[in-house]
Structure formats: structure tokens, C-alpha cells
Image (cartoon, rainbow, N blue to C red; front, side, top):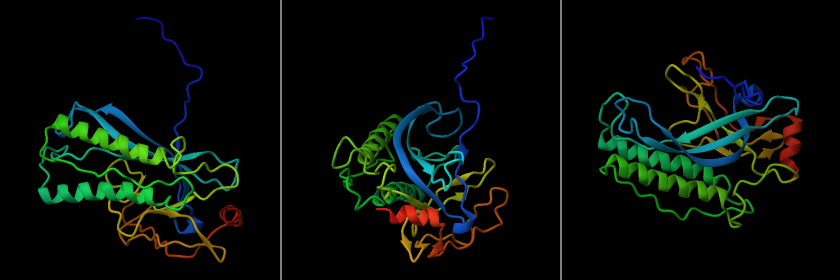
Length: 253
């Protein structure tokens, strides 16, 4: 056995996840800071893309901190290629495939739409088109090309050297988002965006009469409690009261 070298600069702590604000009826506040395409090899399973190099479109958000002394919290949302065969080996019906493709597009477009009206916003020109009957290799190539186009639509606005989501430093903080995250199902429970967009899961944070004015709302079966599926998040509703610090930030434009 050869020598073992230790990287003294390696981080030994995990990135903290987003934490809902109890005072905002369990909504989160955060900034989109990065959109990227990465690739990794899928583990051995019955999934259609098992043992293949699979692309993913990843959105990275940073949680708003009322106090600069608090630790950074991050939220990662990834879109993976849609498969016709599940990890269990079960084939997905044509009807469900249609829904899965449509909802993937809606989630991406929903996040992109939150920056309409910002100085560097540029609409998406790419027309998504997929072929569920293509070979596995062909589908992965299609998804990679699509994800790269979507990342570019976020990272290159009217000014191609800047993203459509503006830097949140300085006076211009219009890109602060109100976000609805819910507990996932399964063994490794974590906070995630809802699978279905419905009335929305993100929106530009707006202040009205000193309160966070939002249409974001939890359905009865949605929860932020990672320990139980039986505890509802409660209605986010509108006009959720916010702190003076956040109100001052949102009004400083």
C-alpha cells in the first residue's frame, strides 16, 4: 500500500440545506446563484440509463440571511433525463411520459419567468422537442443539448456576459425569491421543489404594507417536516409578515 496524503484544505463539513422560516409560514427566501450542466455515471440498476454517463441541469440557490453571522445555507435543484423504464424495471406509460416531459419544461420555465422585467432578462428561444422512442444514447444526447441550451438561457441575457439573475450584492436586490419547498418522500427525506408547478413554487419577493405579498401556498398533503408525512406545512397564504431587515432590503431598489 502506498502513502496516504491528506488534503489540509479540504472542507470536512457538509453544506447546510435551506431551512424554512417559521415566521413566514414556512416559506424560504433565497437567491439563484448558479445554473450549470454536470455529468455523472448512473449506478447499476434497472433504470434505462443505468451505467450510462447522465447529464443533469442543476440550479443552485443561496438562502437569504437576516444576520450576516449565520452560516450559509444552499439548495440544489436538479433536472434529470426522463426515462421510459423506472429503476424498478417497470415501464412508464405513454400518458405518464407525456406528463413528465411537460412538467419538466414547466419547472424550468417557471424559474426562468421569475426574472421577467429584470434588466438583463432575455426570453427562451429554444423550442424543446423530445423523442421518447429514441435509443438510450440518442435520448441522453438530446437531453444534454437541451440542458446546455437552458443553462445558457439563464447565464446569458441581453448582455451575453451576464446572467438574467442579477448579482445580489449592492443596492439592486430584485432577484430575491420567495420559495416553497416541501419534504420529499422515501428514505432520504429532504426539502425539494414540488414535482408539479400548479400555482407555482417560486416568485419574486414583493412587499406590500410591510408584509411578504405572495400567492405561494401549501396544499393539505404537503409538509416541510422531514420527520413525518402527516404534518402539513400550513397555508403560506398571502401577506405573510416579514422582518424589518427583509422589508428594508426589498424596498431598497
